Image 1: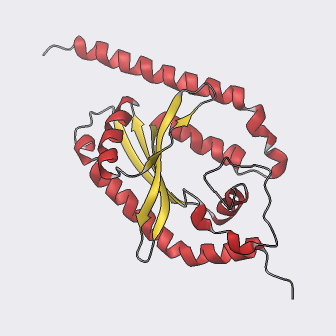
Image 2: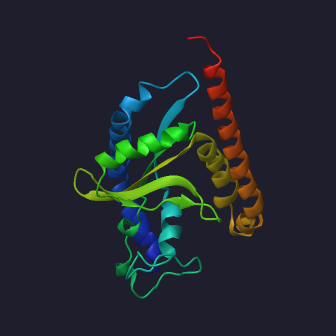
Length: 221
């Protein structure tokens, strides 16, 4: 009988954690939705707030853990990393920061700043790690921390991002990041085009908000 691999061990751990991960995802999403109600109730007809939750897929979690330093997961990731087959006990999916994730999509993106202030008061101890583009410009707010499950706190994150960029990420993730290794080079090749998309989406939002302001200023009181 073949010996159990690190991957086998982690898949077993994932199956054990999955029911609780699912519950925590729903609880965290509900808390976020409740926390931002003061903003959601005052949205105008052209404004939008959407809250989504997800549990990281098993293979995605294992692949990401493989890139971590098992002694200190806070160190920079190593995309070429491999598991130490002689020490399977040092690996646990609980070292990941984003087993559970919640994303708040805001349109226009100016609403994201208001949402961020409200959620910071609800999760004051969570660690910020904003998502930035290649030029260092912030694309989204991101925070990670521990969120209580029924038997243990689990590693979670929440993001607040422009709805346009968030929807683009959904397409990009499915088209590039979930592909087989033969297609991984697309991530590198498409960077320039991705940067152009960010600029175009931001320009659209800026112009949209400008036109709304012009329209409202010309409307009789």
